[in-house]
Length: 80
Image (tube, rainbow, N blue to C red):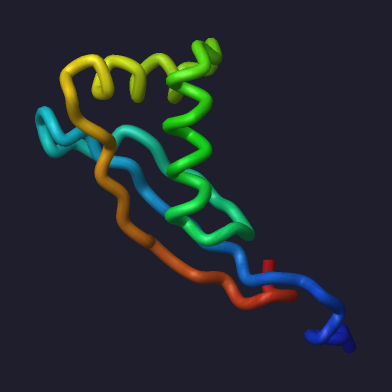
C-alpha cells in the first residue's frame, strides 16, 4: 500500500486555447498550480524558446493576446 502523505502532489491536466480561433492547441500536465505553469509557458515564449508550444504562444503574444487555459482533470497524489 502506497503512503499518500509521501510529499507527492496532485497532477493537474490542463488545456491551452488559442483566443484567435477558440481552438484547443495544447494539453499539458503539471504538479504546479496551472496558473504558474501557464506563466512559465508564456515566459519561455517571450525568451525565444524553440519548442512548438513556445512558437505558437509567441504568435499569440505578437497579436497582443495570451492563451486561454482550462483545467481538464486533477489526478490525486499517488494515483498517477
